[in-house]
Image (cartoon, rainbow, N blue to C red):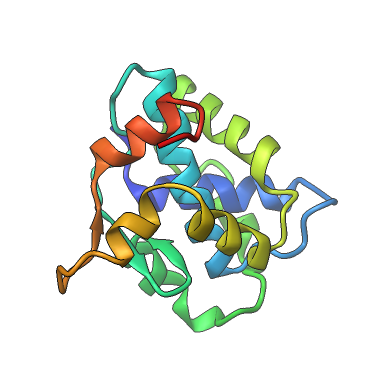
Length: 151
């Protein structure tokens, strides 16, 4: 199983090689981590891509450790992606899921990804729960993605 930071590094690497995408901020990175977890869960019949919890924050799903790593960039694109070339530990199936996620979701600007995660799926169930610590359960993510984005 990968670590969320390795998935993030691979996403940053993909961004550095994609001239169409110049807006990979921490905000967008967080949404792509969430989508990567969902895509991989379906591809692997219910397994996690990474163990770290995904939390429901105001602007959508967040992996806290990765958020804190790149927090200094604010809403600006993360430009240090070249240093992540071959600096991640991922299997070929993990990379495949992340690449599929990249191809499907990287074209959207960060605000659209926020809208998409708010409007559809497990984020809203976690965010509007009465629990003070709002985790988005892996089972909810898997079920959402396994049904093609229908709850």
